[in-house]
Image (cartoon, rainbow, N blue to C red; front, side, top):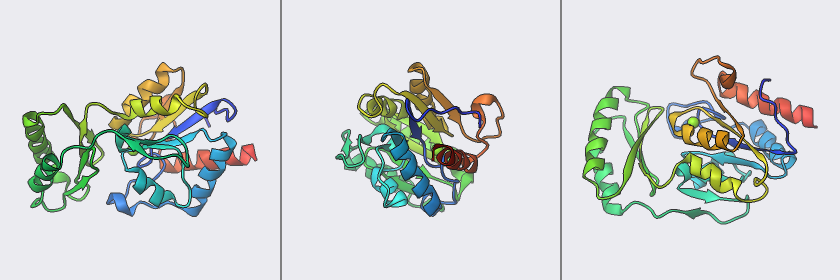
Length: 242
Ligand SMILES: [Mg+2]
């Protein structure tokens, strides 16, 4: 495995969908094996706690997926965070209900399109209706343009997310890196998507290493072909560290 990892001095940050878990037809249908939960729990211990998720999902959703495991994490692209497994969940101010309803209403009649209201952001999923991509982008751009808040349209895999410009995954990584047990360690980040680029940037700026997963790119920085390769890497590490 190319990614040399030192559990005594590195901190590991993992994106979830497309990195650790295979993309499913809908975000709710992803498969999390008992073995993976066990491996991650074990890895968390071996790293002295310096293992965290940085995801677009809400922390509540993440906890549900990986139960009973609870990791430090940042959810909704840095809009919420829990700096330690047992710590409280904190967050930025949510978007107004009026604004959120405007977006929910805009897509109510578009078949196969699902709006996920994450309070701080809204994700418009179209995994089941990819033909609507352009229309969704146009509609969202126009709503954002008229909004009185500084908002961004962030494209992901079969999803557009309306996000406040005050947070991203890079800030999420910075926030976690500012506290023990992450502080002072070298950050290692694994992600697969455009939304992970800010975290990759933050990671490299700190002298860390980052890898993008999948997308057919076989450069050394992109040695993980798919989430299965990431899971195998984790499992191999657990065997080596045993
Ligand atoms: Mg991802």
